[in-house]
Length: 155
Picture 1 (tube, rainbow, N blue to C red):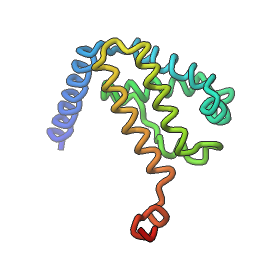
Picture 2: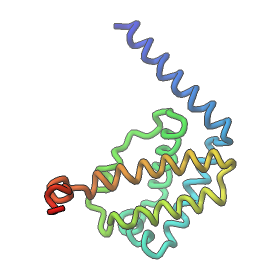
Picture 3: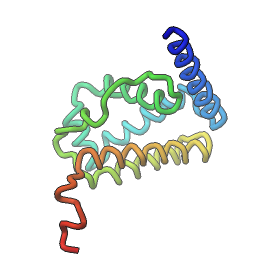
Picture 4: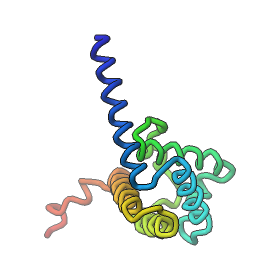
């Protein structure tokens, strides 16, 4: 059993080391993650459609959310386990959240990366990751197989 645990720890360390090397090669470090989160969420707060939805949920808690998002993106980029939350559950029941807001969220994220990403490769990596996250959230929050099944739509 102890060898299995040590083997798993070594495997996870290898994953982290590989991720860190990939991020370093693209010009990504912890300071960039901080800048990305701070810049993006400052823009979210002033966005005409996204701002009210986020502020409705986070009023008075923005600093905590910013720290959580820094841990989230650090965990995603560096595979370091810094984030242990449940994104789908966190978005359930958010007043005003709608599937059509996610393309706007992605467009704002893309604009932020255009402005601050250190390399084109970094922008591509973060956008692809954000697109997967958005798709996962939209499916989890808004997809209903009983309603959305094409076979049931008379087509």
